[in-house]
Image (cartoon, rainbow, N blue to C red):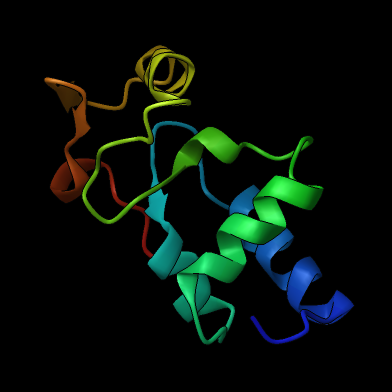
Length: 98
């Protein structure tokens, strides 16, 4: 992965903070809006500098949270009214557009 700049980190953080409660964005959505080369950069930023962000509002393009986060992420999203069926978020109805 290429070096990530402070400006890129701040853009990603601002975009994630802009996702309203009850909505989600994919890692790719955030990467596109931040003009990053890969959604993996968004994941890396969340991992190293995202503890204070609404991380649960960022989901894989499949709509299925990763196994290690599934229970907590789905619970947080459910509390915000995000629809999910069989552990999969309905991106058509809950996706935030930047």
